[in-house]
Amino acid sequence: MVLTKDQQELVDTLRAWSALSPPMSGDRYGSLYGLLLDLGEWFAPAALPVGVECGPAQFCYANAAEIAAARGWVYVEGLALVDTGSTRFAVPHAWACPGPAGRAAEVTWPPGRGVAYLGVPLAAAAWSARPFWDSSPVLDVHTRRELLRDGLPTSWHAEGAEIP
Image (cartoon, rainbow, N blue to C red; front, side):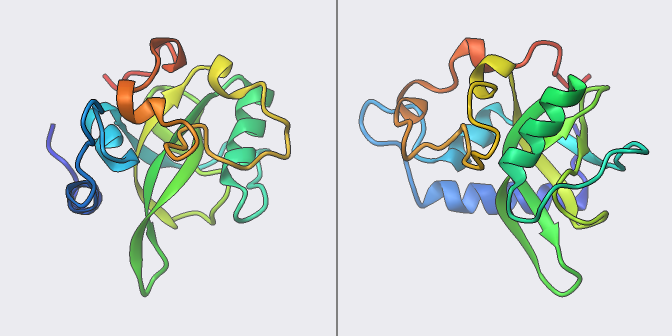
């Protein structure tokens, strides 16, 4: 797969960050960045369908979960490359995938802000039991150390979310 300029910038950032945190003895990954480089899938920015609005700023995990649950979309967590117009940086983020696979429906930021998305589509069983107000990541490697040791549980990966 040939990466876009934006995707390559995100990969380069993740590789640099991942190199700062090599896996500890017995661990598969040293950081979320390493996990995403191994298991992440690319999602292209896509406009929200008519009638779907962005949720509140800084609540991407709750916004993506709410839209995914309400519309039957796939919930995705990973990192996104943000372009503010004057600065570009990678941030942990969540979005929804309305289908077909590979489209990132941005449910938190204004259109055009997210330019590259690398994430893991998560099955509803991995995230749907959280309270609606919970805006913390499921892929929090600080509270779920087993993600670094073992990787993503097979049951957490959303079916049919692979990019063609």
